[in-house]
Image 1 (tube, one colour):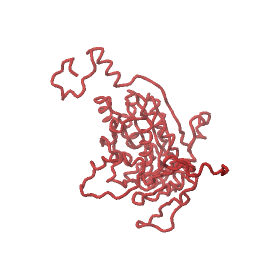
Image 2: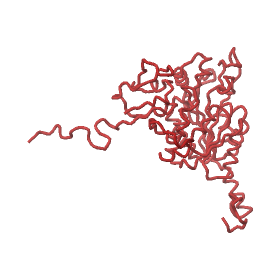
Image 3: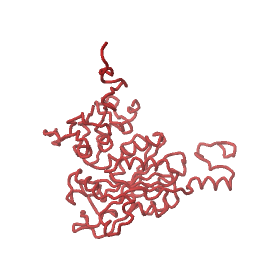
Image 4: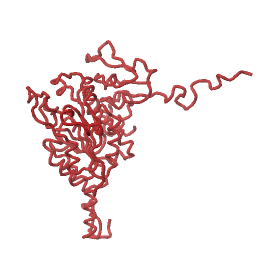
Length: 88
Length: 306
């Protein structure tokens, strides 16, 4: 899951610029300080490169996503591995 | 992290839930968000330094940070380690004293371009000549950002500042080539658009036994960008990204073709004898043992006592 801390984010939109998978989008409504903050619009595209974590000047972004889509976090398969076998 | 509570001021202060960004464990959480402008490159360089430190397998408790005056020199105030905030331009001079008296420490110096190139230029050259085991990270934002956008020695020709309303007529300093010519053993220059390469060169500079100088060209959207028609930080970082050339591609080009370009890469990577090792060798030749450390805590100066 991608989480953006709204207390720390200042809205410089460098994460929108650097992400080559177009994960982030800019919100329509401004927040209390009248800044348009980014939000993770399509998280499924994320390739877990963690470039946005490095580039973010305010340490607001934390990326916590499984390494591959077929593995879950506790190192087990996220699908049935015997789905192609015939039932006897 | 459990030891964050050491630095909180109030005991009854309730911490709000914040994102566990990976490098927030090294920062003083109660001082965040930091004072830098939105889109400033200093926050990015904090992240790159910690990633390089983790890659180089260096203990965080063994690091001492030294800084002078400026925007970039506020970085050690946000980091949970031993830090020294010194006078303008003299950060490298203080760091040499710290390194000579405690040779086991990993001393890291954060300086800006005005701190490092203009007022502390002599200290920079002579530290490179002596080849002391320091890691200097120079954050070059092409302008004096803290005092209101004056022209600095590294601002490019033709750029507009508050002291040059018709454009700067002087040639800028080429800091990386200057330090490489002065005799430093590891010199590199990267920008904030190429973060992963900067991580790699910070890792090499921390491992290197000698003076290592890493210049990172960063963006200043409030003063440099606003006066040069790049108000948004995204515009500035795209301009930086478009005007970089790798050093191997720039070898055959002449001065006219390299006019507004930022040459990027490793400028020096060699080996030569180090300053504190030379002192220990000299002490062994004439005194018979290494120099005495922490002599105020010793009861006698006999040779047997350590």
